[in-house]
Image (cartoon, rainbow, N blue to C red; front, side, top):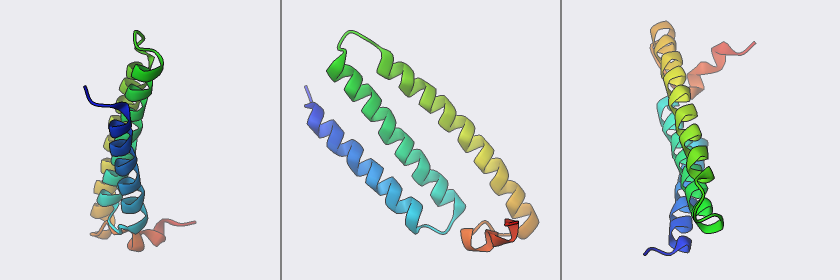
Length: 102
C-alpha cells in the first residue's frame, strides 16, 4: 500500500505547478488548465485526508465529487467566455484583455 505522505507530496507538487502556471502563463486556456490542476490537487487531498481520518467514511469522496462537478461547470463557462472573446478580438491572450476593464 502506498503511504499517505507520498500521495500528499504528489498533491503538493500538483498544487505548486498549478500556481506557477497560473502566475506565469499569458494564455487564458493555459490559466484555465492551471486552475484545473489546483482543483485536482485539492480533490486528492480530500480523498487522502478522508482515508486517514475516517477510514470507513466517505465524506472526502463526496466533497471531491462536488469539486469535480463545480470544476466541470467552471470549465464549460470559461471555455464559452474564451470562444466569445476570440470571436470579438481574434485573440485570447491575457495581455490583450485589458479592453474589458471598466
